[in-house]
Length: 487
Image (cartoon, rainbow, N blue to C red; front, side, top):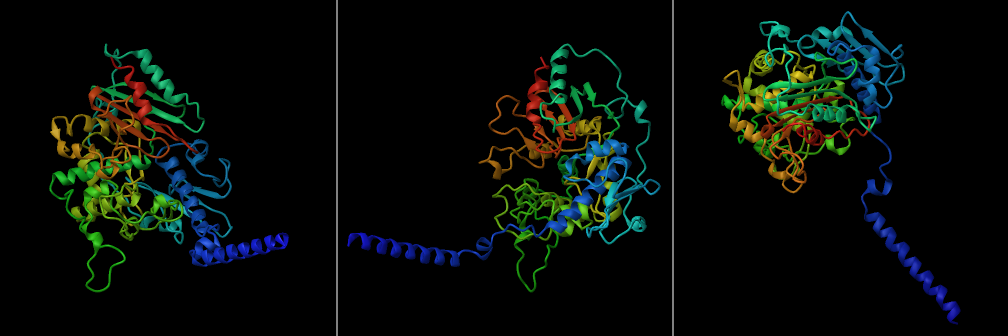
């Protein structure tokens, strides 16, 4: 009897579990029940990857002056499957028009990029051809007077050989350099290392095939250049940290609905705390979001203004390219005139501190992509760092206020729980690092782009790389190694 009753009870219990599971399943979201294994962005990812190759190849050849072999060996190592080889295949290089076209007859759009005077390479929309190049913006602002080769550093590139200062240990400095260049990880490729102490270049080293004129992409180090431009305008009273950005948002609400995004301030976007919807950090950076402007010819400012508010501004840190681009659009609105806007970075900053080798690129609509799309060399980044090290002064003239420098070095309130590692578009020494000076602050860009300012040691350290894969080069570790040489 007991033997027959036990299976009955088990069957009843199993039936109850099945019913409960069915109820739970029916209550679960449809996407969860169906699974989300299909990549609905696959077509756009393929288009964007070709747009990346177009920009990398175009700038590598025509902005950086690299060979096609160098471009494939280093610039394109970031891509999973670049099209073609140095010998050809699947791409076209138009050297007369300084343009490239990437693609083959496989249903993915051919993507094109063209070099434009004063700006670097600009990607075209998928439905444009190289016949549309003349529609793209260009900048013909004349260079600053004088010959950089005959102008002493830091305004120019003339550096006289002289013994190292007595407080610098040459062997320790060389050891720091070897630490940077001779990486255990083959994915970390150091192109250049520059150390400036008390305003003087005390160490400079380049990888084979690279020299002091070689421009490479800054990636997000561009954000710190952008922050400098915003600071110049803020010092002029044309921008304000704690006032709303002051433009219309997309999509525009119908009727008399109050726009909650209208209260977002410049401080909040520079702190990466806008509260707007995550796009680039949601796994879609190379499928949609800012990637559409970087690599596919979409408008950078329309995409930036087309995100919903999901958190209270200032309360949550979320590193988004679009937050920078919102500030760039506010800069454009503050300047007003489109040509003055294009001229502004050169006239207000680059030419005034000798950054002759720096190209700030735009999208095809003429809006600066200052979240990433800048090409420059190590010495120009050292000049930027030196401007900050000197408290915003250059040759006795104030270009940037101390108050603005204090702002960029102040931790964003929303980073308090994660280590206070970010300020106003500059990175800060995180709380858990005790082996480097706490007053150091740094630019940071993908593939290992760093310009580090260390006020307590009167240092600027620049490292440029073309890292790939998992990367992982740490600028604070580099600071630790370099300061061993400073007595």
